[in-house]
Length: 283
Ligand SMILES: *[C@@H]1O[C@H](CO)[C@@H](O)[C@H](O)[C@H]1NC(C)=O
Ligand SMILES: *[C@@H]1O[C@H](CO)[C@@H](O)[C@H](O)[C@H]1NC(C)=O
Ligand SMILES: *[C@@H]1O[C@H](CO)[C@@H](O)[C@H](O)[C@H]1NC(C)=O
Ligand SMILES: *[C@@H]1O[C@H](CO)[C@@H](O)[C@H](O)[C@H]1NC(C)=O
Ligand SMILES: *[C@@H]1O[C@H](CO)[C@@H](O)[C@H](O)[C@H]1NC(C)=O
Ligand SMILES: *[C@@H]1O[C@H](CO)[C@@H](O)[C@H](O)[C@H]1NC(C)=O
Ligand SMILES: *[C@@H]1O[C@H](CO)[C@@H](O)[C@H](O)[C@H]1NC(C)=O
Ligand SMILES: *[C@@H]1O[C@H](CO)[C@@H](O)[C@H](O)[C@H]1NC(C)=O
Image 1: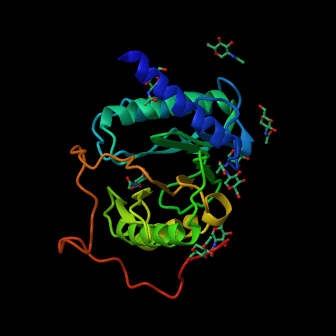
Image 2 (image 1 turned 135 degrees about the vertical axis):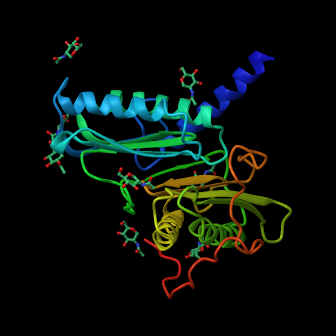
């Protein structure tokens, strides 16, 4: 029944809000899961830049030709050029992706009035815009994290080992993706228990394989700060993000997109570059 679905989503909303109260960059408005109005300068209301920004964001969420959930557009001339990137979670349908981008864009422009540069997102998508080119650049800030506050896991060490093993493997796998898709999802058993951890990692596909891997490794280095004993968590960078939960939150049956590349199971996808001595980064 509709009312029980409503109750359920209210619970989810409450969880998100609780989690956000402790997030590093709390969204001060319910509606956006995270946002940052980047302090790089302001545009004037109704200026050419303002018009270009609105035009650009509209062209993203009305675009029905791109179906891989990654949008990389620019609009305008000279100093009034606006650059934007939008990225959806890989398992959502193209029309849900557009709806998410529309809501996130509207909310971002409303929440960051007159800021030339901003980044923000909802559950299923991220939107950024700036007056500088942001394509082909690995950026690790501003960053955000969100986590599940319902309880803490008891076996932190075992949980952490499984989580790190999974995130590293998925980071390598996502990095081996092509210029349209760089993501991977999978699950792993938690040591000495029947519990599982499910994770989804994703880079903007304009990144090189090594930039994608570096970005995800660096993001998982934030786990000690955000998520050690948390049964679920996310770290969101402008160029990459990951999420893990003890319940399967992604939809592996999605068929609007190809399955995630798994270099260990297929020969058609090139293996990730040999790993260097970089190892896990901690911050
Ligand atoms: C972006 O806008 C800010 C504020 O107007 C300005 O200071 C900066 O030079 C602009 N950057 C570029 C690359 O145009
Ligand atoms: C831009 O405007 C906001 C308020 O709208 C203000 O808080 C911020 O300091 C301004 N930034 C610059 C660089 O002028
Ligand atoms: C911007 O344009 C809108 C629509 O034309 C108008 O209603 C509004 O007053 C203008 N705002 C400013 C600050 O000029
Ligand atoms: C976008 O906002 C509309 C209106 O509030 C809502 O019905 C819709 O579910 C939202 N879509 C997403 C993906 O958030
Ligand atoms: C989980 O652990 C954190 C950090 O030690 C603590 O602040 C928090 O209160 C704990 N939460 C629960 C639900 O036990
Ligand atoms: C989790 O694993 C990482 C990487 O192996 C390590 O640096 C960190 O100290 C571990 N944290 C805990 C709580 O075991
Ligand atoms: C992103 O847009 C820039 C500028 O239009 C273009 O040069 C680049 O090829 C695009 N990259 C992707 C991955 O679409
Ligand atoms: C991770 O990224 C942050 C922010 O860019 C940077 O300060 C830090 O040095 C990086 N960590 C490593 C180990 O590269």
